[in-house]
Length: 293
Image (cartoon, rainbow, N blue to C red; front, side):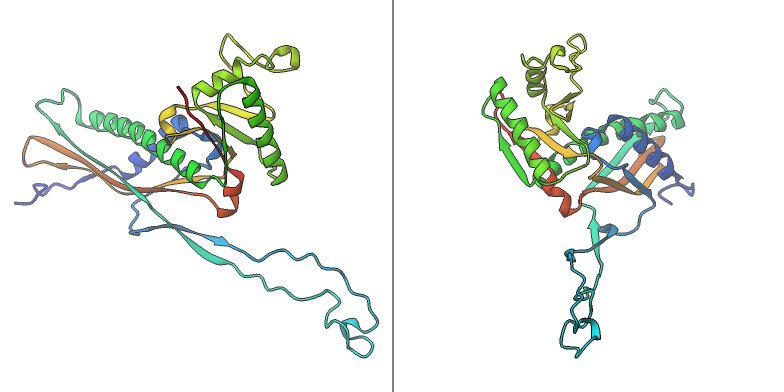
């Protein structure tokens, strides 16, 4: 007997991709740091998600040579070209690989589901997408923390220590010539300490709202309160320029097939995902460590 009783499997790759993309767009943590999530359905490549062009050729600032013997003039003993040495530019292909998997394996029995099967499947894809978004959030938080080229320790939550931390961060991003807007993702304890700081007042021009516990910016950095479960242990904040991280998911299968063990269908999905950032951008990520008691 056929495993699907000669019935075709109902395919849901496009619906699953659309729901996951929508849910992720609303519920993603570290949202400003992310480029739009890349979601592909029907992927077949086992390991490679995509390739990017990279170029490591350093920029050489030359000077135009006007010597009497340069560029073939005079006796030709000077530089061969008045433009200076010729630098060849080459690009390499860097493969970006998947580094985790996502699956769904659920059963919907017509006798017990108490709902239309198609409606139930739509609900489950949405709920799975929400849970998977939380999983992806944790992976992005770990990725940012691991990728950070600079780490600063915050000894305590005093006004003095917090101001010193942000002053060091400001100097770090200025000296590295980071021109993109930078967002700070903070655990609630640190965020609230900044909101409560005596120096953060409307009298000094801060757009603070104690009614909404809101402080949109501090020392030029956008602040975003972020759930603690999305940080690695010991990390209490991450500074990151906007739009430098690419999250991606490739959906291999999303289907509902008739079950043999019960009167209903099995909802099955298999996907692969990963996170990517150019190595050059990692120096623009700063991690803050500390202990919260």
